[in-house]
Length: 507
Image: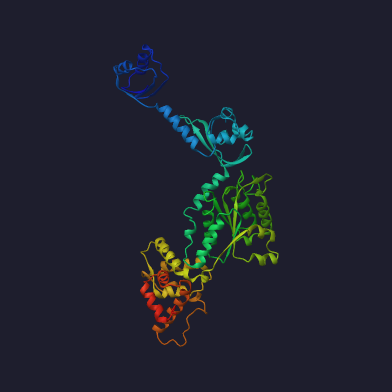
């Protein structure tokens, strides 16, 4: 039986309670004193002795409890340590292991019994480890260490007694793959799957169907398309639709970094690899993404040296860090993208043909926005809602002339340009209706697509000519009045009347 005694604080009350139990030959296995409570565990405690304890002077109450506080804390502490996927060690003032969780036992390669009492200096193969702990006040800077042949980032937290004297530290080891999971979760929060690729056009529907099949194939994927078409969005969707969806996703823009920095970002670097490097080294994206996906944007801008190093990794999944001599091996799927014609670059000697063969096992092409005019207005409406929310403005809508201007524009910058145009219009427009003038598209409209002004008699005739041209173009993609009405956001009867007026779709 486990009981809690609530008492008035007086000298000797605990001794008197234990004397009662002793006089009745009750075996006491645990006692915890937390004034004004005394917790007692006595398996053989009977009802008569229980009532006798209540009559001791100063005792206010005696109640049965299911567990002693210390045992409860130990239970929760063990559960807390067991739930940690990262290795955690608690060490004493001389650096010997006092407590280790299951992940730490597994990482050390020793049994739990053998691990307890072992020096961390011995485990890490660093004779000066304990000395540095003392010098740094048991709070070392984050650094990379090796335990049982595996690399970890070491984080230390000092433990102090009530007097302030350091009693040891808690050491947490972070594996690169675990760090990658957390970084990826932060960087890619909200990144969705194929539902984030907006567009009702036949081209986009076919692309999404093709991409969904390729996402399940664990092989390198090359995405081509003009700048601003959404290649990275498609790469995210392919990762989300793959068997690696629960693993990290990292992106590297090969055109945005010089060769040396791009190499260290992708492959990482060893301790002391170059001036300014972190003292303990740094894992690269390939290590952080182990089990997941790395997206190489603008891979056509990669230097010949990096091309050769990437080719070696694609051959067998192994690489070396910058300045390192240890061979590392990870399981990563590579998705790459480019707006440049890699075949022409191969012919010109600017890109390795063997690397192209490795990257181009599977391929997808992201069509330009001008090649799928049916997606322009749905995308514009989506960006309009986002821009209003971001700018803190009430809902706005596009006027008819604004829709016409959007459809007539060349969109050399594709979806990114459309998004910027809508955001600028929302920011600068004074009314809740965005007109063609608010879009500031005059300089970017293609001369070939600009409406001819010769022979235009009235505004009504010009609008009718534009309406006819628009309906003729969209009817080929949406060959039914109901689908076309849904595409243009109007009623079925209104579209049917206009099609009849212009003789579109008539037998």
